[in-house]
Length: 354
Image (cartoon, rainbow, N blue to C red; front, top):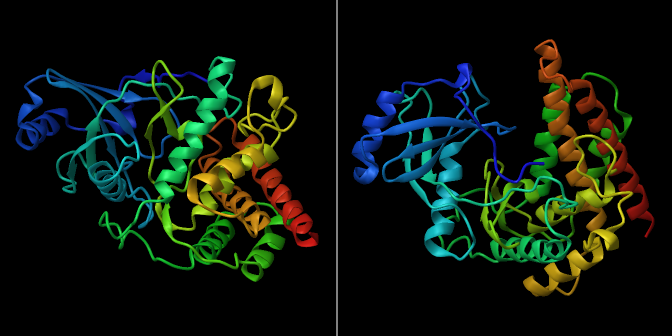
């Protein structure tokens, strides 16, 4: 629940040749200077992330993980591209990116470097680490920032080729169904039902925007002294996609239990006592900011988001089991996948009745 990311010495598995990196940075960023200290951010990032301390300031380096990775995964080049375009052409808050290195010879994998930002990251959607009067404004900033991202004209900022402009939900359902089947360990009947149901109930209206893909408080940085969003982080899953998939994903905590470890849910919380908005208030504000009359097929976007997250967690669970469950909470992760799938199927059934 820390509000400042924790730093540790570089983990043995992620060590690289620091002298080569320094030489490359001195060439690519002439102001960098001759001193460099490297530490690693602790946490669940799948792309290892490091703090570089130099005479000219603090920087953050993000690289692909070592070893063999899936062809489309961990594309730090894409993260750099989207943040660069947004930083140069829009008011959407992103870290200032400096340089991209696609040459794996320098530190073993491609990487990019951006400016370090001082701010707070609150991982749980109940926002208990903020004072009560800051919580509602923080939600308003989060929604307004998402609306601003979705309002960007992708062609005008040079991101027209950042993904395929149509059929996002259909493609994602196909992709995550394949991923799920490849990492399946036990029977999850709700996943089988969702895999059959979602292709038959795709959103009636297709839209295209920059979709972040993992938009939640844990990936937003708030200013140190006010509840304003100063940066959207972790663009690894971003692409051109349906904006309402991002909004539904942001609203998932309303459907997940508060008392289940790792779920960051709000079910069972007293929203009013915490000073938080409910789902309807969030949808209403988003619609107002994006000029929408309302939202059709909301249950489809929610069911899809739960299905996708369940498939992602199933992959984490399978990897943990294959590594003889090096991850101590692997079994908990497995339980979460089935809960997400069951919740998604329940929403699909209930939504179909309305």
